[in-house]
Amino acid sequence: MTRPVVVVAGPTASGKSALALAVAEQFDGVVINADAMQVYGALKVLTARPGPAEEARVPHRLYGLLPADQLCSAGRWRDLAAAECEAAWAAGRLPIVVGGTGLYIRALIDGLSPVPEVPAAVRAACRERFARLGNADFHAALAERDPRMAARLDPGNSQRLMRAWEVIEATGRSLADWQDLPPQGRLDARVSTLLVMPPRAALYAACDDRFLGMVERGAVDEVRRLSAEGLDPALPVMKALGVPELRRHLAGEIGLDRAVAEAQRATRHYAKRQLTWFRHQLVAQQTVDAKFSESFAERIFANIRQFLLTATI
Image 1 (tube, one colour):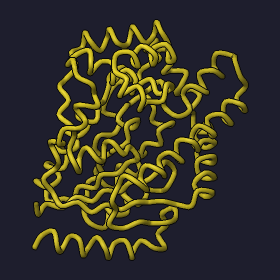
Image 2 (tube, helix red, strand yellow; image 1 turned 45 degrees about the vertical axis):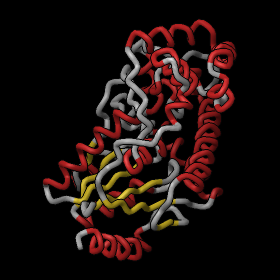
Image 3 (cartoon, one colour; image 1 turned 60 degrees about the vertical axis):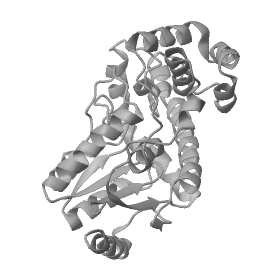
Image 4 (tube, one colour; image 1 turned 120 degrees about the vertical axis):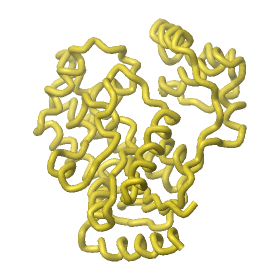
């Protein structure tokens, strides 16, 4: 385990992408995406994917990789990310994994519980049932069949509800039982994790400003094109931050100002949940308690240099 990986994690709008780019330039790195929405090609603006200028400075991987109608599980992403780490090492480069999807990052660092693959037919039947019942009734049905998982899940979290249902349908065992098993598939590497955790007020202001910028750069047209594809509303990409609110605006249900305000509020709530998750679930070797700035980059670089020295001894 001498091969090094740097992980840059943090909530949305925290500046982690800028930090990852700076680290990649300083240490001849490859930036590997660990954001569950940035893997999709349909939402370049709304997911704040790196643009051509950033991509020209250092290699970027796993951005815009999948069409909107596909699912990207933590296991699928882990396998893709592990392959990109191997390719980076083979090229003599430092893999830098960056994102705010905590489950993805933990899957790479610690592995995943060995849940069997769910057949496509089971998944399709589950989605049809959910579309017919809706969140509340689906949650009630899950509570009858798998009370342990139902007790853990928010009735509004459609993706996790369907995941729990399809696992017990396909395997006959609760997802909770599978999650109790030792994880498998952790990356064979030494990992240094940088956690970007700005103060909450500053983070919320950054969330609001960034969403306004997204609207100015064409987010409404991006959602219009996505809606025209006629996709299943339960797909992850259809629930990306800003998509439900802008779709309501495009349908004539609310004005643009209200859509923006609601999307900003949803983004702030999501950032709050991320702050809580990272604070309690991720062990970091270095925490940056402000939005990343070049002014304190050298302090971060010094710690990475020390990590790289110990990783290669």
